[in-house]
Length: 301
Length: 305
Image (tube, rainbow over all chains, first blue to last red; front, side):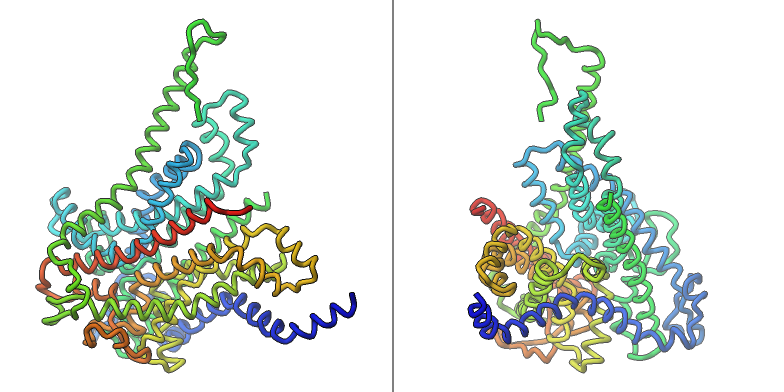
């Protein structure tokens, strides 16, 4: 026994040590990348962030005039409100549909129909955001002009509907996981008492899975906040405090995408765009962290 | 499933008013939820149908194999299409090994402790970082700091990091599906951890790993924001029909960015060309996804344990 172990140990040890080190390195790569993203985005924006940028104005002023010759203003309030208004609108549409579909797929569906719906949702999730933007630019634009008699259809409503369609698949898949995680004994106990399937769902499953459902909504919202191409193309692209679903808006992400190509590297405007990147990174990081804690909370129960 | 219990005359229990009300609510809810779920099929069909209808006059093999012409107002999509293939292949070469190894670490090596929790959290957060922030990272890290300049390499590395969580998540799932008893049997024969992984765990999950890799390809092919400032350009002429027309240290066109350009930046594009470009993009992405789904369904039917 001893001889055998010795022999195998010498023959594999070197290559095995190398490969295991490699595996460990790859394993922690995600941590390195997340820190790397923060570090490098921060590095490009840091100069102006600590030296010259009025942070209060940055967060509370609606005046975004980065290219003005004698009155440069870097206020992102209108952009922040743009992002949050279009995300809120998207969630108002996506949450009922997403949760409804998740409940149907997990509780009311035959296995065959379930597979079909899941594949359709997966395909919906696969459509690239630039194609959603193109749909917003063409089909949705005409629809909104026709339905609301609006002068132009590239509005918050347009972007909100697109973002809703893009975040529904995330909401459905996470909410369905949450419902599936409720032990079957809960369902059996309720059904034994004579509850119908809807009563089981409404009185037992939804309360039991509420954390997971909340996480699903949060991750759907995070997706909407971070979405770039669709809102860049479909929301009218004018810096504007939104007043109605038919107003034109510009989001934080769209601003970076539209302006980064045109600014001088290293200039104030360039650095401000990176600071907006830090802001976006922080927002989505916090939302993801909360969603993770909410999900972890269920597991500990 | 059969909550609608048919009560036959003369049965022991007769239906009361409460039972009837319960059944009615149940049916209403069921139909309502079915409608809500089915409504999601409509946008998918509508989009594909609408794009195809508008694109049909333009779609042809010639469209695929000619360069954009006349300031991108006419011609085909050869240069952007080939560019997307370059970006996807290079990003795949980077992210597939890192992603698979990372999943192997998380599933086979990592212990249940705070460090593993942080690693998992990092994967989740990496998946949640907005694509435009990945673009900023790509500019800061690859284009400027690493000195790659705006090139296929820089854009692909950005895409690789962005799509890493896709591979990690699906590989982890595939590895988890291999029963623990397989590993235990192998360890009992004296095999080391890595030998077990190489001879038992990976061969038994290779198809699941492959579906994840295919999904990564589909994600990478559709992304626009991360490549906009790191390596993809609005226009670059290359030799038609030459598969090696691009150099990975130079810039390239990309299908997704091309769609953005011709639908927003270029006036008077020939009617139909943007639609045909969109169809090619959606078509390739959905086709890749369909392959991945098909592979998964096929594997489930012939699983041995």
